[in-house]
Image 1: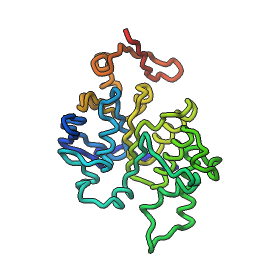
Image 2: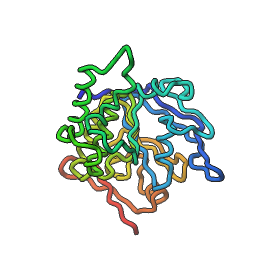
Image 3: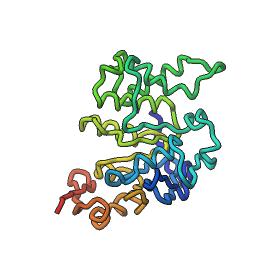
Image 4: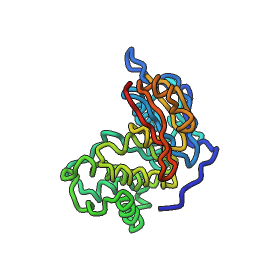
Length: 263
């Protein structure tokens, strides 16, 4: 792994007045967001709040009904898919891969944006794939077929494929889904150590506390944005998530831990 990239004030990915509606249903409304180079921005909110939808719009997977997304200052609509893929990688929540493909070949698909007639597959590409597998503790799966993997193993391979793209920006939709606690912690450690800008949708609010900033979504609207302890206040947690909460301090290292209760 490379050294951790410092967070700067430079905006690398942004959206303005972003909205999406399907028929009569408005899924996102007037989202304004500037994502800074090197930061880990967490997206949190109840189910159906728009986290996955926002990630798809930021990645260009879906087109917004209104507003715009800018990647390094350029309108996403003006960029080719190849150019976007050389800069930005996505790990979707329900991503799929051909059953018959091997794990190595599935991860190697991440090198596709960089290959051409003038730049064919090389030893450097092979090394990048092996490094991506090491980063997610999946080297031992290299020769396995996709169909033989468990849900958690598939998730790790999808993340490895995204890492193989060597992106500047990584978008992840609840990447710890289907993983046991050991691999949840390992994947989040990998994500936080990457020298990239990361936008990550998370279900676990204590995991979200490790992000540089959090964007809180509620019914398709951005209702809070800032440092985790500043936005995940007891009042916000009650209003948005419908739970009562208070913070505990871990005596081992002084880390803040959320204690949640329904009443």
